[in-house]
Amino acid sequence: MRHSVFGRQLSRDKNERRRLLQGLARDLIHHGIVRTTLAKAKAVQPLIEKLVTSAKKSFRGGSRRGASPQQQVRKVLSDKVTEQLLMADAGTRFAARQSGFTRIVKLGPRMGDNAEEVMLQFVDERVIVEVVKPAEKNVKKVVAVKESVSKQKKSAPIKRSAGKRGRPKKTK
Image 1 (cartoon, rainbow, N blue to C red):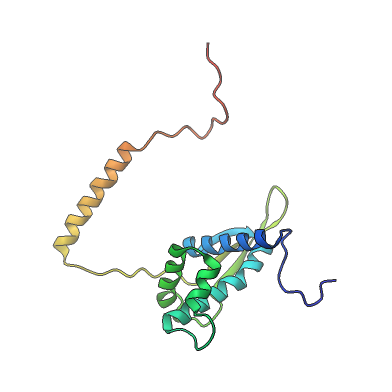
Image 2 (image 1 turned 90 degrees about the horizontal axis):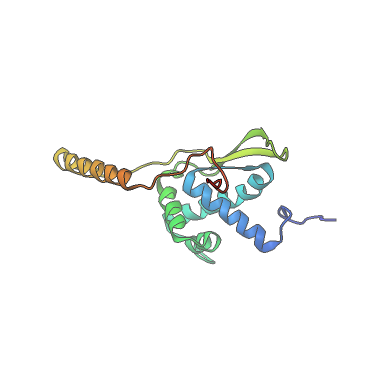
């Protein structure tokens, strides 16, 4: 019996489960939305809520005792880029909210195994903060960006058509 045992096992051992939840948390922070099964979403949702709360605490100035909130976030995510994204969002995106940073939207059963599929997403949209500069400088930068994008498109390798899979057939 599993009386008073916390957490979901998800048919994995401890390390696999930790890596799964860590990967889902990273993807959610990067993309803002993750499509997964209901069991995995329910398992990772409390972890994300705690990470966002810790990030908000570190943004405001830390805690009084124990490890700093930034260290707690670093320990779970173990990725500097994701940690910096979360810290940046803590001051803007989640500033007005005390809790309930994520939501689960049910999508229905998956075709292959009939597992209940859901979308786990943040409730608020990402806030983009930009510094406005005089108009003359921006025009030059936009022209330069458009030129560099067109150069990249010309030098990009040609992809195979999506209809053909596997090894190519031998021709005589």
